[in-house]
Each structure stands twice: as C-alpha cells, then as structure tokens.
Image 1: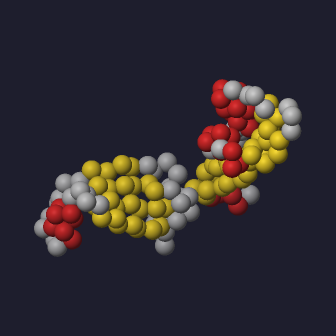
Image 2: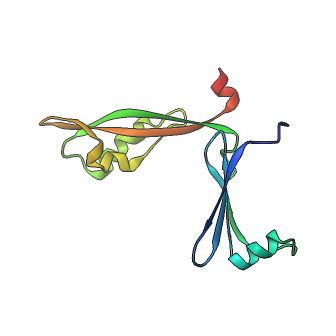
Length: 135
C-alpha cells in the first residue's frame, strides 16, 4: 500500500427512505464519510448510469490516527451539581483526552460511594498520530 492508501470498512444499510453508505478508517475506527442516497439512484450508479446525486457528511480529521481509550475513576461530592460534575471532568481532559460526559451521570458507572462522595468510572478517548503512538 502507498502512503496515501488506508485500510477500512465499508458498510451499506438500507432504510425505508434511503440507503446509507459509511466508510470507517481502519486505524482510528471513525466513520469519516456517511453517504445518503435514494435506492433508485444507488441502483443506477451501480449499473453504470453515470453520476447520481447524493448527500454526504465528511469527517476527515481523525483518518489514519490511532484511537486510544482509558478509564478514569472520578470522585465528586455526593450532592455535586451537574455543573460541578462536568467541571471535575474538564480538569482531567489534558493531552487531548476527552471524557465521555454521560458516564458521570449514569448510576451504572458508580464504582464507590460513601457519606460524602461518589466515584464514577468514566471513559476517556483521544486520537493520536501514528508516529506519536510508536514513541
């Protein structure tokens, strides 16, 4: 493969009103393009009837990067407000790590608790260049 060639996955899903075609990057596991086309236009394109109209969403930012994930235990006061819980996550979002906010509001992620505090297991993720991963 050349430097401009990437591995990935193609997925095609048929809905009542349209067909959705997505392509996922093999290293970052992000869906970087999502195409919506009518079933009729897809069939015409597949049978070589020329350029067919479609709508698409392009997300190229993380293509060829490496996806990393980690779990962090986040302790907050038992009666912390939503704003205070989110602020506790923001302090931990360093070096490109981003918290999955909904984890701190999900009682299934409550790991420890006592009279004063609750500790939640929160998933963090980031995307790094492949060169950084090798270091």
